[in-house]
Image (cartoon, rainbow, N blue to C red; front, side, top):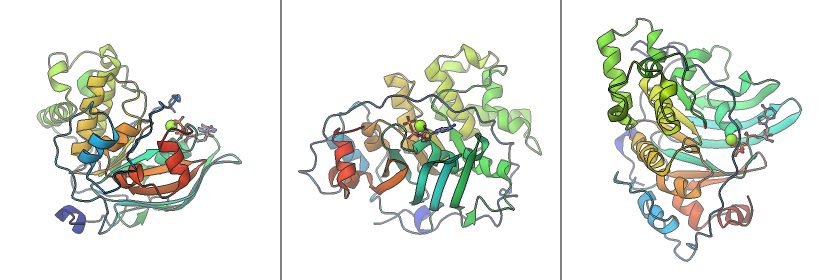
Length: 335
Ligand SMILES: Nc1ncnc2c1ncn2[C@@H]1O[C@H](COP(=O)(O)OP(=O)(O)OP(=O)(O)O)[C@@H](O)[C@H]1O
Ligand SMILES: [Mg+2]
């Protein structure tokens, strides 16, 4: 594949996870509690096994999914990663007490790629995602084995500053989680408010505006930035939470079903944003919506029963899956 320069030449690697940045980092985002689950929608058979030739995601969108979203961003030439991965998982298992939720998963998450994680409810998608920024260990009885390497450093290493880690690996949860006592502006600026040195008020306003513009929320809230965030609609709140995660400019963004509670228009805006974000960062998105995975991702991982069954370029996975279990799932025969 002819990768872009950013893939062939990964960004500079931090020497340790504690300092992590030259510029003043904001404090980590407060992480909300686990979100409730949702029943996955069943989609009809892709019917696309007769067209096995790989195609970029935009083409996948046209063939695999009904065109409910128009993606204008140029597709990557290929979804085969090269160069140093930003994030890689090695033999990762995650437990709740004696129960194993993620079993011996190894996967590479390339820089400036969107990787979608799909699979039936309860297969371990959220748990795997939480392991990528050490949120799993915040849950009762939770335990992790294995390695998660971020820019060559094990995030489970003893020297790692977890707060700093989460500035680099941001996360957005399935349900919107605005800070209820804060204004719209302060929600987006939340991580910046405790940064050291703290950005000036004017600089903070710039960052807030940019983040809100990226999530297509600016025009809707620019005249009520001082109002409480809980006054926003659910879709607006979710885009606010994405803006909050983007304000600290993470290198990796983890999205757990970010459009599960959104209307079609908000979903479209978030999908377009996700597709665009891969220019700047590594994105991992959990979704029950296979059409969404086809629309926004370069690579897709299929999980089942805590195991990673296969990961492949999105078009390949949806047209010529390697494993019969993947085929059964994407054609709606289970899950
Ligand atoms: N806090 C918890 N305590 C105990 N077990 C949990 C907890 N959270 C999840 N589990 C279990 O871990 C397994 C994986 O759950 P996980 O939430 O990762 O699945 P998922 O693939 O994200 O499902 P969904 O698509 O429904 O969100 C399930 O069996 C679930 O019941
Ligand atoms: Mg989940």
